[in-house]
Amino acid sequence: MADPKFEIQMLHDRVMVKADPDAEERRSSAGIVIPATVKMANRLVWGEVCGVGANARAVKVGDKVLFNPEEQSEVDVQGQIYLVMRERDLHAVATPQTDHGTGLYL
Image (tube, rainbow, N blue to C red; front, top):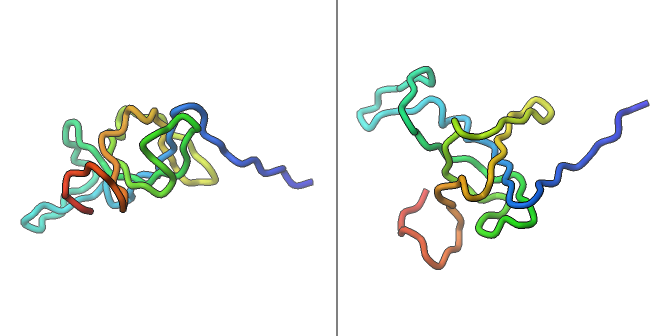
């Protein structure tokens, strides 16, 4: 008998994020590739929101968010690693429509 499938629903102000796989390896402005093994202190990364709790107010599924991956909890869902965090742990949201953005775009 096959295992039943359960849909994951985030609770409260929790956000589930899939980190950008290109965030690990990066390239300097001069074109030098910096491998993932070189860690920089407090480096923030971008990720995509895959789920939000009912009390999350500023983000929605599909938004790009900026966060510190070192301070988050990881969860493995069907072989894919996701990060779970509180909405207040996000540093920025990149969304197509905003009323009070920075004027910078991804």
